[in-house]
Length: 394
Image 1 (cartoon, rainbow, N blue to C red):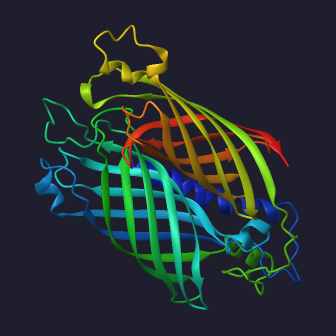
Image 2: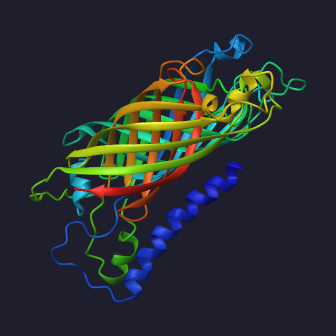
């Protein structure tokens, strides 16, 4: 499986080069004044000296040791041609492959992850800068909990899980092509209660990386004009932005999910859970909105709290909540963070909850949205999968 993922990343590199070649074959002319000709790509290897956030007594012997993890990334550096790139300080994005060794291979396994990442500057200098990076993807090859064959592994009940990561690092330009980095990161693996147990696995620690920058057009322009060399790094474009006008939005989010419970670990039934969220948001900058709204939740797993699971009043499976939150806007991708408080039926799930969602707009008014809704605090309740629709913009 690891070989297949490296193959995918190689094909991405090959496609970037192929597109450059096709551009030349379609009729290439040496640009006379384009200082950002081509694509500003990079490949990067990162080694993580990771430690566990211990959350299992049974796995204490494993979690007292460090974890060996490595990632390989292929990405693009933006140059400010589009307005959103300037609003976010010329970010980079791409796809990566993550590989880990978590102690004995027959307990936690040697999982890998395929993910997308996005990052930008906290402070950018001429050669030295400070940056952040976020990643989200799918991890696989975990050895899941089994009451007979793997009873000590009591934190994850599935072989395939969600991978989330955040990293802060400083990067120094060593040469025209090479950058070195040193940073700290946190990675999280869980399945959002689609299977139990689901305490999740969290690892953190320092990392060191080496990045190689290249412009795929350079290999082809030299065949036409050996004296012309497209730049390896972009010259960031700066221009005046249009005046920002604050806007108000009213929108709805409909979602469904499947979840299991701690009462029936490993082979328990999967219950349906659903969400209807009605939101008012106000965009206060080019890249962000604040908002508030109401949540209507339905959770059929609450039947387990009744002796007669078939005759449970509908109102006892419902929750009503109110939330406040913020949305970060990266062109058609929105990162949503919300904090909510239950107004009705609080006895089962505590007083408050959080939502971490990712929205991708297909049109200006319609999109898909998904992410984690938590219980009282940060513990996973279920993963919401659904659709977004904008009812009004004013």
